[in-house]
Image 1: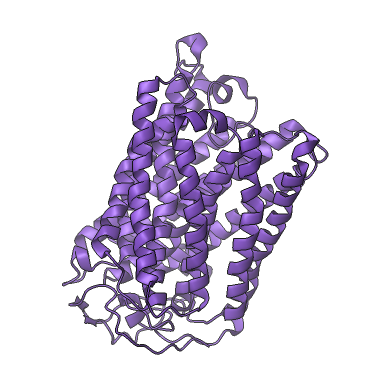
Image 2 (image 1 turned 90 degrees about the vertical axis):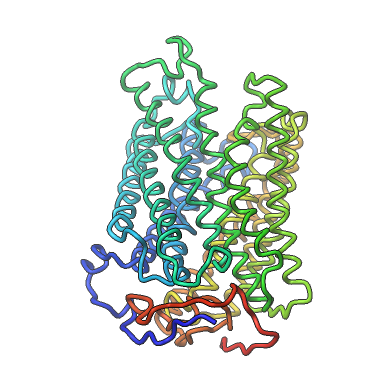
Length: 539
């Protein structure tokens, strides 16, 4: 049993008001809300660029944008979505809000550094978005050299500087999480009593602090080569453009796991709660997070199958890449086994769980196609790749993020939302997502290259279907903006534990008091110690 009840202090939302109290706060929950507002804005900006791309591709010829503007639009879509939404979304919002509470402590190890991380994040975003108003960037979010370092006349240096600055935010946040988990767990909260969300955030933090410096230095080298005409990647000055790809993907493939590992942690919490069962194979799920984090650093070479890499090196990277599927499959199998014969209730979080498992499974299986050298040579730089990584990074990561937001929203805000609206949103996102991106598997297989603003007429039907699906997807994403905003204003007050879930966060009031726990927390039971029956209070 966990002893943590007895918290009657002022909630963090009712603590001192005023803009300064929020901008200077050291409360991890308020900082999480600052991140929530920030990344929601960046998501809207990135989605606007995506909508423009799909409008352009609805017709075979470039009717809406010329090729230069199209290059800039899809580059900014990728940069904003990856660096300013997908990477920080779950760790910075849900991780910041929940990790200290799940560990039974009053805050993160370094509250001031936590606030500093948000300011660095905002500074990096502003610098990057300045590139938009300074002519845009046309290199793609990968900044491939030598085009980015010597040929492009767009604002590569500004955008690279923004990404470089943002990297410090990830490093400091990851360091804060790791120290908190190691040093500040409540008495009795052993490693194998930790919620699986904490395990996932811990593994993600390892990737953040080990991988982020590499990409930060890499983009800094690109900026230095442009400004100082040094020869890191320029072959005319003795540089090697393939070296850039090695350095970039050494971080950027693990970055995929920075995006999806936290979503997997969210799913573990949701699956246990909606099934009213302890997670099947808890230790396997926990260690699979670490296995994914470690293996993620060994697979970057599969991005270089067609970049003069030797066939023997490619064979090694191909095998290791396929090994990543093992811990990923362990998680999926264990979630399914947890739900099997569980008391599954069809509340709104369940819809996001099912949607996540469907999209992540498709994304994971199609990853095996790209890990196979022979198939990858045919599919490289086609829409098959676009569809695959959107199934993982958008279908999986955003489903996980939205599922987590719906699960913990009553805890974060103290308000309930429309269950009907949430279920409709989950269904529209799932249907719209498949309509948008499944046709892109077919387009890629038929050879349609990515990043082209015009294409032969015979591919128009699938592109129109994809653009129509994007409209459905957009409605699914917009719905929560309405019913969650309404819940903030007129939503019914949430009880401490609306889902009947297990975990320290559900033992304190909704919204939580400023210092989380007034009494000392002692944990003497395993995670997810569900009883056979329970009572649900959701209205």
